[in-house]
Length: 80
Image (cartoon, rainbow, N blue to C red; front, side):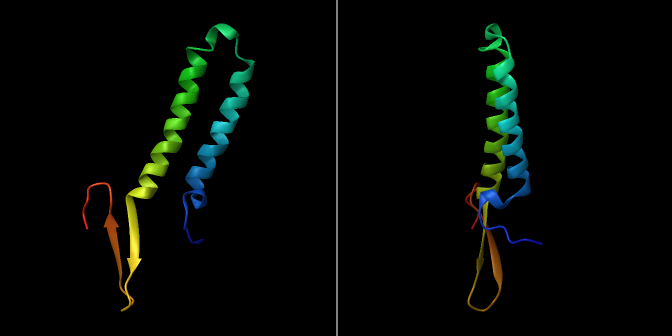
């Protein structure tokens, strides 16, 4: 298992990024009249997916203490 140190290491984020790039390529061929309806909605929803993954990734962090024990902290709810 690979060590995950940053957001870009997450496989889910990598797949979401590929999906986002694919959507941006696909919507280029949509008709101009859909630019502010369907195209806008597709782009916003995909950016939201990547944002949700990033938010979840940043919510927790782990600390390894000098005695070798690890503790996890939850940032989103201020639980330390």
